[in-house]
Image (cartoon, rainbow, N blue to C red; front, side, top):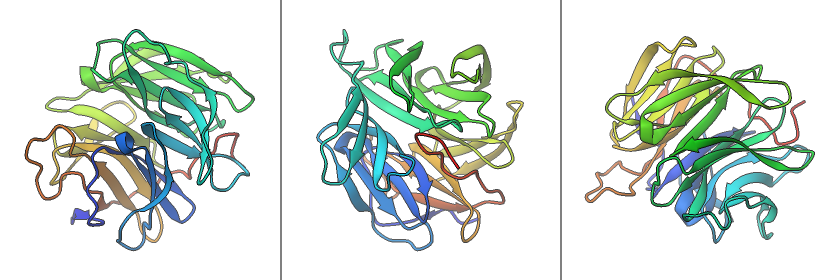
Length: 286
């Protein structure tokens, strides 16, 4: 199995991998950039949107090509190239400690879920928010230090959410109205911190493991099924694609490394034997 760097780019805090149509999307969080790459042909990243606030993750907006819902700055916004962000809410403005938004994704019903964290890593300062297409951004969970993910099963009935600082992945049952309940501990990660996640077409959970140079794949019951080693210390997010062949893409970061290695901060491509559901849109999926 060859684990290859997909381009010569090296990112400070690469994150938020998503496949949208023929494009692979990602962010470089602290530089506020939304980037596009070709998942079929290695090459440099193209900047789609450049914000003056951190950009944690995006999802495409239904029936509005080129527009994305974004976990950005201290809240959730709609962004597009050449436009100013249109804020849906900025719930972390005025928090007791400076905060920023982190990872996020859409569920199968078209709701956008995104976490927040303190810049200084204050324990328990982070929250998980749900943005509803009909309007409103709601805090649904509190007490996380560095929430990462979330990731949803194909029916949207289960949500996985990591607290990276605690080395723990939680699972929640989610109601049709978007209320998480019945939390259980899905897995503990030893020797690293669980970061970005994705559920594949077989219902297994892929997890980037920060600080360990690994990606884990878990069975739906939480059993560790597979470990993929990478030549970068800080993997951050994952995305399985089907076309033209099944591949796992993984972002990584250089932030905090006093002497980054040659592949730290790279985007990697790894052949795999499983595909993933299509990207989910803010506002619902056809």
